[in-house]
Image 1 (cartoon, rainbow, N blue to C red):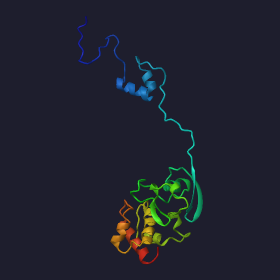
Image 2: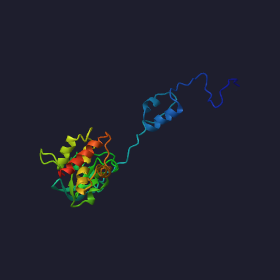
Image 3: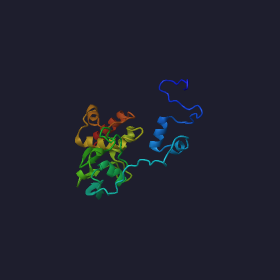
Image 4: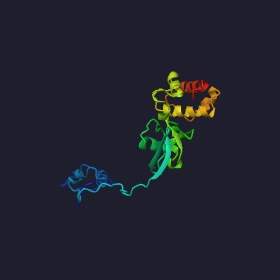
Length: 221
């Protein structure tokens, strides 16, 4: 009978066969389950493996996604688009038509970077499905300028430095065009209120408000 003592909870080991494991039991199990480091685990004496365990893969879905043809006008040009029913106007603009001036910011309708005009009204394009707008007229930042001639509000943004990094600018301008058309530009406070759905993380709000006011006051919208 051995008088050798062990710590409580510890496993006894044969003194003639010291443990040569370099990984803990937890680490070895994790490596075997995930497949990461399986070769290293297999090489450890006393750990038997039956080949490299398969790595879990997401099930593949080979069935094509059904599309729906939607006809609409984009910046004055008639389009017939085969769209995924789950696609937003924003994704159709950016991914199908490569009109990347409309920005994807929060993708939750909270920042206004994706603002476009749909039938003359400003809309957060990330929140509305393309299939809901059969026959709609959509105007994006790419459709404001007349060739090299900037839209008056675009010019006002330059004159009043209404942007810094520029990421939110297209949405700000499209919202500003809508704000002017709606007649919500009688005062600075009114412009701030009706433009509050568009966030500028750079803080260029004074220039934005001044640009909208200028374009409206001169009848340039």
